[in-house]
Image 1 (cartoon, one colour):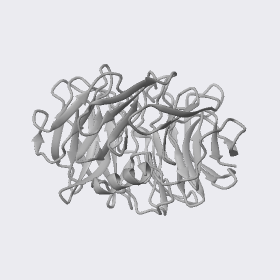
Image 2: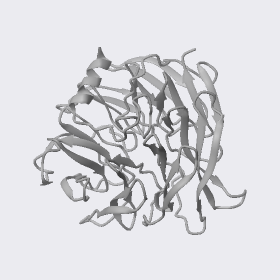
Image 3: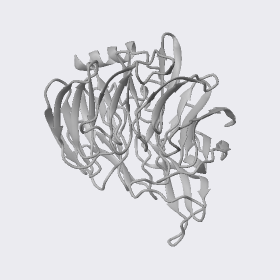
Length: 418
């Protein structure tokens, strides 16, 4: 019943699936709707490094991009050092067979020059942006080092290395589809902008500079495509503010300021007429915004905001009437989506970067230490199971064929009921 209610809420929210791919595919960060919902109904609740493991495949190098699923293919990116003492990185895309876990192809897309590359945060990687697919191609983004389109067989269709900015702590924003465009946030230390590339050619269709009165800092936000009163909006969180843009030309529709928030990471969610966004570092705050305004609507269209134990990194999860979040420090909170009122709060333990997933009528939280905490959605905190994998993980789940695809620091697992 909860699952049915959640699906109804999603369909009535005006959220747009950003790619015309089959419903069974998990073709972008956080799945078909970008909000972390899976329709699979026979997923496991319990697992370990041996229990309910269909396969596990080592992945060379390091990358925190989340895997995506297209048909019988699993796609993921990684960065492999070019030699033991070299700082150069081979920025790669891998395709795995979904059934067996075997590597089908492994291709270098860009070579990152270690002498000119900016340093990354110890919790980041050189391959943290998740791929996205339209069912015919896979698109990969390595921040300022390049964006590319490949066929599902691994052939490069186009490359773009024009998106230049000074990254701080590395890259992390994942691209989305908007009609015939690939849209991504590029928020660096020297300049911030949202850009739309033509899917077929990789050429820049439009580029919207984000102006900040207080100066420029960095963020890693992933946009969300929504529909309001029959019109599409690209909701793109960034430094000091979140804004909605017109898909046609990138013109700003509305914006909400959230003070000194920067290093913004969570992807927004949308439902019940509200966009739920995180404000970033220093004082992470969750805001609910009515997206039917024009111009700066900070004083008129913020329905509520909550600052206690809110996430800096994990995205929120909307299920039915409630929003579920977990802070980086491991405190899970359930809020009423319409009022922001706290329903419950519980310390899970550990640290968290991955975004939670709703599947099989349950909420799955994934800690950096590799622990999955499974809870019931609802008015009370009810822990169903707690599972462990090694080593650590920062990536969010992909879901397909009643299986979880979980990326750890060294391998990808296919977890399914046996």
